[in-house]
Image: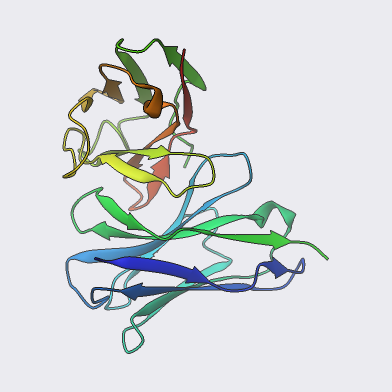
Length: 120
Length: 110
């Protein structure tokens, strides 16, 4: 059974960098059939797509976040990561990692989510 | 990229059918058959219930169905049950090679 688990600091100061890692177990991140992505949800609000990456390193980002975001993959650790720079209070959210099938909108496995609060 | 438009809330009585709409443009919903729907309970991760407009993952009740007409996708839940009370989100691929979610719909089972 595939599992995804987010990890990283729960508190980040304004203007600093948010860094999260998603560890994939029960399957290989190197499969050519999938994209691996990040989605966030501010408290009490809706979902926002952040970006995707393939095992090869190809990335796609939300245009509104692209200048501050980098998603990377480490196939040796079966992990992919999110880095968001210059954070503000509006970046406070639950951050989810998820798997999506290529050539499909099937985003079938999600992590449980991790709350990141931006505050001094 | 603007969020897809969903009604903020819908409600129905047990046994009834309800439909949640998701309106976009020809650059997203209308242009691709990559619309998916997610069910989310409070404090939980979203769960995939419909993908690629009409497909239902294994294990999802056949009371859930999806469709699309022009720039509007729809999720229909038939035989409404108390356990269906949750938030529902649509999601679509866009011409910008990005993905966009709807604002979410809160379903209340009366």
